[in-house]
Length: 380
Image 1 (cartoon, rainbow, N blue to C red):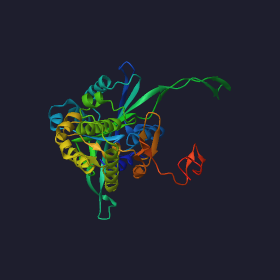
Image 2: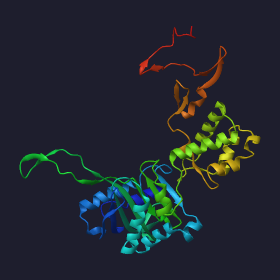
Image 3: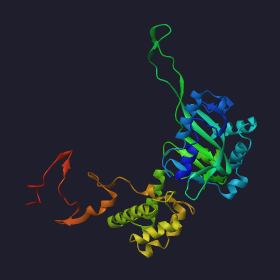
Image 4: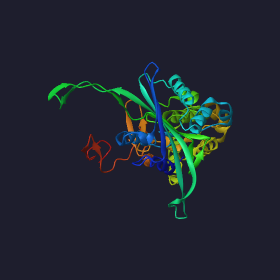
């Protein structure tokens, strides 16, 4: 799914909520025990409850693609023999009305989602009448092309409110406040099936994680049956490992700078595309070639890539570079520079010592204080 498709589904969760027909869920405690379940027609809820649920559902479709939102594509084997995909298909097909199907899903969540505290699982079933679009790319509400049927499942922490005092208007006294179990914003969620090319795609789902490094792989692999993606930090670490294993020794400074520069250019070239730009195995090899790594070093690249990342693994290009600054570190010094101005930082021999050299122009500050370079060593 791309940004526009995510936004289109997100826009359904507004005041009328007409696309949602059913809501259900359960509460699972820190001991992985199911404490309660419920199932209702969505529009039977009070407007106040509906509005609060809309906040949860919108949050489950927020964040950056490739960092917080991941498209997970099922393999043929996962669809034919995997319990996870079958389970989600049953949930959708029964419209969240079959108690047996729901109970099995709740049990699977409790067994695979390890949180350590209580959490609330809430699901909705929706039927979205997808409006057609004219040549001007504007919606035509009277020209529906299909009904997109989907489920959205959110996992929300349940936290005990803090102890304190409050004013009781009935007794006209300041008293101890009742401590309640608060439902917080979702930390994980999934949308199934995916809404690709503004159409239902049962071969894929959209997965949300609030914290980029807390994907809950067991839940993804064993409950919903999809391939767990590499997290934001893992992508960067694996990419660096591929480079180091390919080169076979320490990568020199100029090569790293060139790789960063080429990545930044690739991201800029593809920034208008609806999907985040991905690097497949062949793209990574081409990147290394264009960054000055010699062909003899790339002879075993395919083997290194497959052993380190996996044959079909890919990287989100934006996850491999620092958008705001690149850090050049020594044991005692850290220098941060804009990715577009890596050329300012050079390695040179000064009086027989290898040094990091940065041109010093006007506008130099130390801890926010403007300073002049006149009279400093190395100047007239």
